[in-house]
Image (cartoon, rainbow, N blue to C red):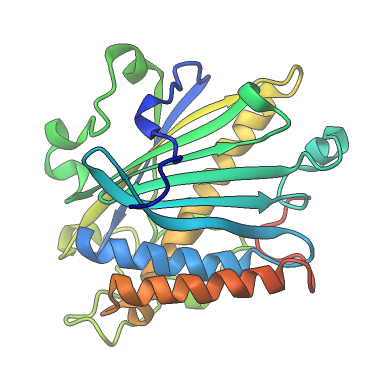
Length: 288
């Protein structure tokens, strides 16, 4: 199943990471629902970030099997000239502003690795994601270290909590009323999952789950390392906040879909992205 040439993610070494950040995103959906919801939202969000020469190019999207692990392997290229800070664009060589994404999705665990051919070993972002039923406050001993970090890693780890109902976490440029979980009504879910009670929805949530996204970040570039790492950490919080607000607000679009439905949507999205990438204006989150 899949290509035998697919790299084994278990053999990768990210011990040289300079920052370790864990983002925790509680959600009013089940772990089983999230598998479909995330894939649907990724397809939709990809279209929102593609155009004007920038965007996402899907190279591979196929099943894989490594020993007993089975899942979906994807390889994408992100063309990012408008998505990075201006000071990086000024210094970066022509053609270097593209990032490769390789993901091994063996749900409920997923490993995603970002790299840049120009920077080689001086840059990587590795994201290990666990999707778990419940919230951290339900059982701190169980959920406090879902990635099984060692003592050294735990001391280095920074934790960022994301509340999708908090409109203060969204910039005025990003805010859309139709993507506010505290305002959107869900007609398909009974009882309705949305609107959420702003900043106080978790105590009544049923079902409930949390995404634990652990980022190992390395960016070694003299004079820019601290600034770029700080930018990445801010950008990731912005991205995860906006994405999961959208995911929940789109619940009536993905609720009831199957994985087979999602694969058809992904195939159609790939063709659409190829057409969109070099047309129209730059879209999505743009950095000045």
